[in-house]
Structures are given as C-alpha cells and as structure tokens.
Length: 332
Ligand SMILES: NC(=O)c1ccc[n+]([C@@H]2O[C@H](COP(=O)([O-])OP(=O)(O)OC[C@H]3O[C@@H](n4cnc5c(N)ncnc54)[C@H](O)[C@@H]3O)[C@@H](O)[C@H]2O)c1
Image (cartoon, rainbow, N blue to C red; front, side):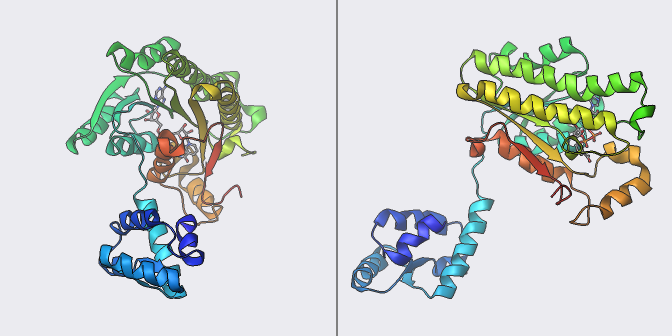
C-alpha cells in the first residue's frame, strides 16, 4: 500500500490510474472510512486535480497525516481480508484429510473454490468432511488411501487423470507421532514404522504428484506438512524429528530440481497444534507444551490450514523451496 500512497503524498495526484486503484480498494472499506479515502496533499497541481477529481469521485478531499495513517492501516487490513487465492477450478488431493489439520485444509481449500479429494485411511470421518464441504456447495469426494503403501499412492495421485482432469495441488499431510521414548530405547519396529509413515510416504506422494505436474507442463503446487520437530531436537520424539527433518530436505531438494518447470514445492512446520496427534503426550504433556509456547496457547488446525491454502494458491506464485514455521514463536 505504501507504493500506492507515496505518489499521492509526495508527487500529488500525478496519475489518475492511482485514483482508480484507490476507488477499487475503497469499495472494500466500511462507509465511514470510504468517505475519507482519497488523499491529496497541498500544492497548485493537486488543488486543480483535486477539484477535477471531486467531480469524478464524490469522496475526494484533502487529508491530514493522521487520516493518512489511519486509512493506510484500514486499507492494509482490507487488502489482507480480500486476498484473491485463485483456487477456483483447481484439483487438489489432501492426504490425512479426515481429521485435524488435514480436515481444516480440505474445508478451506474447498471454500476457495477448489475441487478436493479428501484422502485418508479413516473412511467414515473422511466422508463426513466431504459432506461438510458439499453442504456449503463445495466440490469434494473421498478416496481411501493408506500412505504407507506405494501402490495405493500411485492410484490416489492418478485419480484426477482418470477423470480427464489434472492434479493442480497436492497436500502431503498424513502423519503420526511416536510414543515418547529416548533414542537408545527406540525399537527397530517403531523406527521403521515412523520413517515409513512420516518420511517415505511423503517421498512417494511428492514423487508421483511431481511426475504428473511435470508431465502436462502446467506446473502445480505441492505442500509437505513437516513439523518444528524437524528443525531441532525434541527429546523423546527422536524418530518423528528425524522423519520430519527428512521431509524438509525432501522438499527443498526437489523444489530446486523442478523450479524451472512451474512445480512449486514448500513445507510447513507447525508447532504444537490442537489435534488428536497430541494425545500421545497426555494432558500433562500438553499443558507443558502450552507453557513453552511464547504465545501461551496451542495452535489451531485452521491456522495451519490458512498457511497451506496460501501456499497452494497463485498468491504464493514466487515461493518455492521454502520452509514455514507456524508455531506461536516456539522456535524463534
Ligand atoms: N498437531 C500437531 O501438533 C502437529 C505439529 C507438527 C506437525 N504436525 C503434522 O501435521 C500433520 C497432520 O497431523 P494432525 O495434527 O492433523 O493429526 P491427526 O491425527 O489429527 O490427523 C492425522 C490424519 O492422518 C491420517 N492417517 C494416519 N495414518 C494414515 C495412513 N497410513 N494413511 C493415510 N492417512 C493416515 C489419520 O487418519 C488422520 O486423519 C502430520 O503430518 C503431523 O505430523 C502436527
């Protein structure tokens, strides 16, 4: 917004197109703010222009610095609220979409106009999400897929192609946490299970989605759900930390390999978020987590869904190979 206002403040009203832009923005403001929205500083040119513009736009008038600051603030807020996410007609797959972060992501993507495949091993819960989306007029269907099985992932990623549609967005979200245990006590069975579920499955999902997106040369967006546990040590969560650190490397490496071809790959790293996955920590564990979060509360699945939706959309068109923490300040 500074860009829009500085020409007005220091080179008063040199271009009518700014006024048109402002008029567009002003439609998004409440009535009172709208009345005060167009700003011109003093000087002969601006006075003449101001008089002229007053005929065109009824609300033109001179503004004080205080008004300018307040209006810039309102415009910034309104621009945030009206950010276009361009998901209309996009085909999306979300793994682990039946519950928690995945569920909220499916709902939000569908609200932005996407056609969503809710995928999970939990059929009943997954179909509830589909119903919720269809109830508000969104497009969704359920496809059962166990992400620990490569053949099922191949089938899942091909779902849209089998319907003569393309896969635009893939959210690799399904994940589990290990029961708290020190590394030297972790059994090979637990280790293998965690690595298969939280790392190898993401490798497969990313691999087959990327192939499809490269195949039709139209690009796409892949979002891998990692964790702040992948960014540094979390005692007792060793296998989970290692798997999530792997997801981050998987993301950044593949992103650079395909950046030129319009396939964007990014990772989000949630901090402790209110979902069933935290049940492994028990009530005491959860309250300790809460105390350690600078914002003093757990994250909400919807907050993570917001970030994923942004990365899925064209609003993030110049972002790839990036890793975003969303953790209330925990790892700052
Ligand atoms: N909640 C947190 O505090 C937190 C923090 C950091 C990262 N994450 C990550 O966010 C992602 C989502 O977790 P959540 O918190 O929403 O947990 P959740 O338990 O609420 O949801 C996980 C979903 O994955 C599904 N799932 C489990 N095994 C599967 C399999 N084999 N195949 C397909 N789906 C399977 C579950 O049925 C469930 O719907 C995970 O990757 C998790 O590691 C969560």
